Length: 110
Image 1 (cartoon, helix red, strand yellow):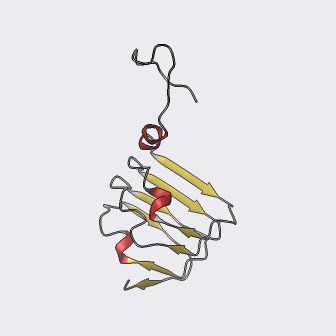
Image 2 (tube, rainbow, N blue to C red):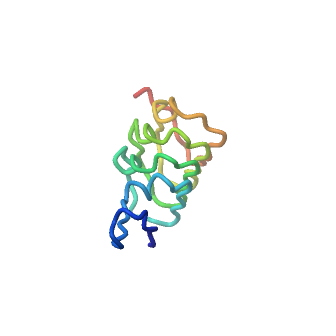
């Protein structure tokens, strides 16, 4: 990683991970078999995220509120995972344009 010295650090440029995370607009995860659950804490720093792909990764559960801090998220691809239910609460604050999910899954009330 490289940072740009703002002039206030006396030549010691520092990079804040929160600032970097805000600038990430796309995350692509594929074939990560150890990913079973996605929680709000996993996503909270990516406030500028627009596109999320978690594909063929064994994902079984996405906690309600996981995308609460991702208001710009428009495209989600969850294909080829092991999801069985998706809560409507996941998407209530989003203005999605595309949602891909190809496993047999039923909506959850909670």
